[in-house]
Image (cartoon, rainbow, N blue to C red; front, side, top):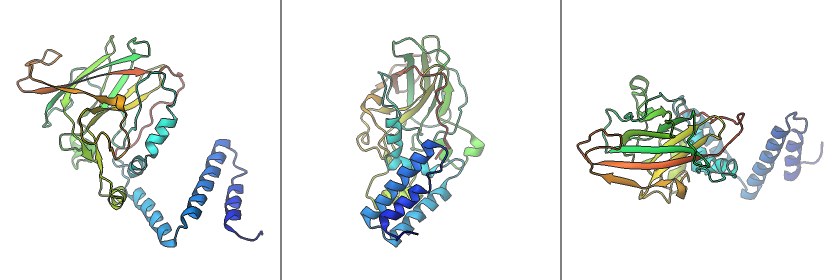
Length: 301
């Protein structure tokens, strides 16, 4: 057994993975050990700090439930989610920008016809959303599925509410575009909101003096045969947190101007007796392999 020292320890741990059959796993574990050991050496990590780190990770796992994913939230606030997204979408070729899936996606949504009101029974300022989905040449997408979801007027997603198991989903749905690639639906104007701060991620945010806010947005997940899936948000222009999103998810192209309207009829011809808002946005998808991985599914946070 060789004499122990800090550098030799790292070499020994890396060597323990040499027989790993999967070359990618071998590479990932080697780089993880090297980076993690370097971090410990650079920071002169104390026993107390190491114990605190273990405790944070333990509590993060214990906080996760079928409707709450604290590890995704931790990844989000550390910027890791957006970094993984960025390196996996370096070649955009003019397609719509991506951003994080977020922790509130709960799997496949209930299909509804275009024009449906996904906010039925929920208070808020009316919003009409009109979208068009095309390829890079502007041709409408065929056979696409569009999942949408967003927070309510108080900043909460349906899955955060205590009666979610009995009341079911709200402010989320799946739509299919028409022959022109158009999707439209009615909902309420979302607002900026704080990420949940009652767990270890909230403790981290407070300890580091950061605010927990996300700017108002609507999530979109577009999946079409023959195209790379698109996971993105559309943010509302003018929100005060656009330049300080706690999960670093805002990109300029994804900011949409929302018009306040007083017309007595919405674009689908249905009457309305109060002011409402209009959001329009066009999505462009990049051709991909038919064997390309489909969008990852994550439990809601």
